[in-house]
Every structure is written in C-alpha cells, then in structure tokens.
Amino acid sequence: MGTEETKHLDAGFWFSQLVYDQWIAAPVRGPRPSGRYKHAAEVIYDKLYVFGGSRNGRYLSDIQVFDLRRLAWSGLKLKVQQTDADIQENGSQNVLPAISDHCMVKWENRLLLIGGHSKKSADTLTVWLIDPETLTCDIIETSGNAPVARGGHSATLVGSRLIIFGGEDRNRRLLNDVHVLDLVTMTWDVAEATQTPPAPRFDHTAAIHADRYLVIFGGCSHSIFFNDLHVLDLQSMEWSQPEIQGDVVTPRAGHAGIAIDENWYIVGGGDNKNGCAQTIVLNMPKLVWSALTSVKERDPLASEGLSVCVALVDGENHLLAFGGYNGRYNNDVFIMRLKPRDLSRPKIFLSPAAAAAAASVTAAYALAKSEKLDFSNIALHSKDVQHVPSEQDQALEIDAIKEEKNALELTLAEVRAENSKLNEKIDEVNGTHADLSKELQSVQGQLVTERSRCFKLEAQIAELQKTLESLESIEKEVQLLRRQKSAFEQEIELNAAVQRQGAGGVWGWITG
Image (cartoon, rainbow, N blue to C red; front, side, top):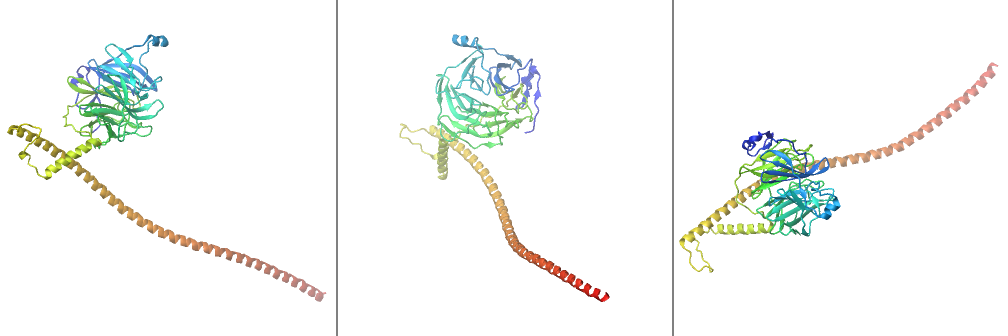
C-alpha cells in the first residue's frame, strides 16, 4: 500500500473522526512523559499504563498513565509492600526498579511485570504484581523451577498460566527455553517440547491462538534478524514451522504485537538500519500475512522497542502504539480504529500429529469419493443403538454428512489450488534450471576453447625458451669470435709497426 502520513484530530471528538485501519496521532492535552523504548504497556478499562524503558542508555522506573477519555498523561505513584527488615536495611521503601526490555501482562485488572534488564536483578526471573486501584506493588513469591533472569523475552497469558519464551540473560546468552508459571499456585515449571524449536533469540513477539497454540514471530540473535514463524502446540508440546502465505515479511526485532480474535497485528520493529514502516496482520487460522497500512520511513511507528495495546472504545477495538526509537526517542500516542473483520472457520496448526490426522481424514474422503458413495441411500446401523432411527433422524444425519462432505470438498479445492500454485512455481524453477543449464554448457564450451589456447601458448613458450637457450650459446660464440678478431687485429698492427721501423733504416742509409 502507499505511504500515508499520520493526521491529528480534534481532542474533543477524536473517536468520532477516526478512519478505519489508519494510524492517527492523538492530540494530547498537557505535558507528556519522556520518550523511551523497550518499555512495557497495557490497557485496563480506558487507561493506558506505561512502565519503565530505556533512554540514552539509562533505565527508567516511572509509571505513566494515559487517559483515553481526557487524552491526558499523569504519573502513578505506588507503594511497595516490604517487610520491616527491608525498610530497616534500605532506610526507606523502594519503588519499582529502573528496568528495560521487560514484559507486562494484564491479569484480573492487575498488572504483572515480568523480568527485564536492570542494574540490580536476582538470579531468577522476578515477577511483580501492580494493583492500580490500591496503588500498591509487590514481588510475587513463587516456587518450583524458576527460569534464569532475562530480558527481551515474551510473556503470554493462557487462562491462568503465563508462558515465557526466549530472551537474553545477564551474560548476553541467548535463550529459546519455555517456562510456565501457574498463577493459581504461583509455581514455575519447565515445559519440555519435542521437534525443532526456534533458534535462540530476543526482542521477538508471541501470541496465543485458540487457547492452544503459542505463536512466535521474528526477533534477533547478536548478528541475525529473523522473519520466521514457529508454533508450539501446548497440548502435544510439539514445535512446528508452518508454511506461511501472503505478503513477504521482512526480518525484524523490537516490534510489537497484539492478537485480537483470529488476527495478530504487528507494528514497527527494524534491523538496526531500517525501521519497518508497514503495520502487518497475520490471519492465524489461515496463516496468511497481509499489509494493513504504511507510514513514512522515519515515522515514530517505524521504530524499534515500541509498544502496542488494544482498547475497547465505544464498542470498537482500537490499537494504541506508544514510544520507540528510530533515531530519536518518541513519546507520541498513535491510535488506529480497527475495521471489523469476518471470522473465518477455525483451522488447526499442523503439528506432526495433527498433520497425520489430517492426512487420514483426506485419505478417507478420497476413498469415499472414489467409490462414489450415495450419502442419501446410506443405511445407518449400530450395535450400540437399541432402536431403529426414524426417517427424520436419518434425514438430519444425512444433511450433517452432506455438510461435512461439502466442507471437505471445499478444503480439497483449496488444496488443489495450492497444488496448482506449487506446480506453477515448479515449472518456473524448471524453466530457470533449463536456462542455467544452457548457460553452463556455453560457459563449459568457452572453457574448452580457452584451455586449447592455453595449451598452444604453453607450446609456444616452450619453443621460445629453447630459442633463448640457443641464443645464449650463439652469444658465447660471438663473444669468442670478437676476442679472436681483436687479437688478430692487434697482431696485424704489431707487424705493420715492425715493417715501418725496418723501412725507415734503409732509407736513412741511402740518403746519408
């Protein structure tokens, strides 16, 4: 989609002026909190709670509250419940620690603050409980096998269980483990999963689908940014990496995500060079990515370390994005009114076990189709039933079977369409392979020609070397002849001098 600039609204009527699926900068009344990134945010009723984060290399410890009705910020002061020993040791009650790269989850109108990086942290993952009504907070005492302290992880709530995945510990060690905190018993447990897990990573996002599937997207290691998607079946405890359709999604980390019904909205992120300007959405049952809207490259929404939440305003879902870093620390609140979307028929993320079950169903349907069964004439018999079904019951059951048949035929049509697309891709790859083969043969022919030329040149070089060797011997003979010539010339000059001396003596005797 094309690039769209964010627009400002009249504060008094902002909710009535919102356009579906378009980000709008909220007209904030009064002072704003300092810009930040790698903070955490959640919505309770009509208030957005923002805690901590990082700015200019400094961790923050403040809690800021944005009132969606008044469109104004305010600070929240908490009381920390400590023992007398803690108060005596510290001299006064401490507030929440300055922290970054943590998670915050709403639980029973209270906030759970999980992990993060701070100057002072325990060896294991710390969980704080914040009560906005009583303005109190405290560390939750947990038992069991607690995970190592970390930041950049994900924390996802499933019923009364909190699922922790990945992150980076205090020694910058990358993690891809899964831990579960039972919020009823406050007990930690390690989740042992089979199949291939995601590569260790941090600053990814996670979501829950159908209260059963943990979905992991993106993140980074110390050198690689990911755009892969992994699914953990929380019943079979099997990892899988399903095939994704739709728009191509660029690798990213530091993005924010929120799941609403069957759709997972992803905002921002980047790769330390470029920010991700598109807000994208994954239809989780269909596993299809699509672009929802775009902003400019340097827009605050194209930032790393921002947050996104969902708020119900006048009966409609609205996305709220805050903060992030894209060359500057941002403190704007952006709002998107979500267009209601049709709920598709739920499908199952195919783990290996689920895939085998689906294959069995498909095989059974293919067998029924090959035998051309007439469902209208099926006689229903059961040893467990004590009476003969009535015609009305049979008709109802036949209708149900026909509906199931129609559903299977629809699924089969989808599979055939997908197979057709795959065949087109295969044909395209085969065509490319044929072109490359021809090019390879041409190059090989050129190599043969060049090798022949090399052989000829080597033969010429050998002949030249022999010629040079013969020239050296000829040069020696020439030098010898030159010396002989020089000696001969000297001998001739000497004889001529002797003759001149002899002739001069006779002439002198005659004239004398």
